[in-house]
Image (cartoon, rainbow, N blue to C red):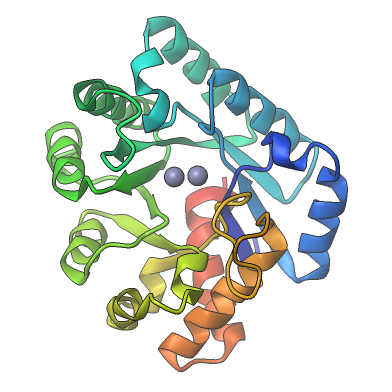
Length: 260
Ligand SMILES: [Zn+2]
Ligand SMILES: [Zn+2]
């Protein structure tokens, strides 16, 4: 499947889009977005179900199923069975978002590690990629990944803000690194310097909408159309034409989410 500019991570089923979801999708297409990953895991399991229903309505959209690290303490056999059920649907092509968030610590860290490990095991069982959220938890992400998937895994570390060594480790273990509007922020020089050293064919772009609107929309509600700003900044950082960035990041998005 030919994938160009793709928003590889947005929470399109979020309440923030209840009033104008169709217009938001239309604006994305008008901005040149070819594909959208409407991730699950932005709240209780019902949000993954809503994302799957949304993705089923559009041929260029896919979704994922999982429980965000914020809600990891709710993870149990029943939730896992419901995630497993969603993973059987054709439009649900990935597990997540899952991972570890030690910045907010909304769930106890032990519960986050346990839920993350179980998501990884589900991904292995269903032979699907994983969408990983990491905030202030890179060393524990490595530890859990190494324990559950010693041979590496397919997936993405979304909203990457780490250092070069972190990125290298992810890439060496089979993961793609995805960038949000944070790379457009004035103070993100360090992140831009890190990204510049990474091979373009290991990267993807996303909005994480409705959060993290890129410049010049910072502070407003984010939406998939703005992924063009993220890709545009990535092109500047790499010193490449934006079409080249669309093509390379789109090929990664196709391989991970949209070729299935
Ligand atoms: Zn996240
Ligand atoms: Zn997210």
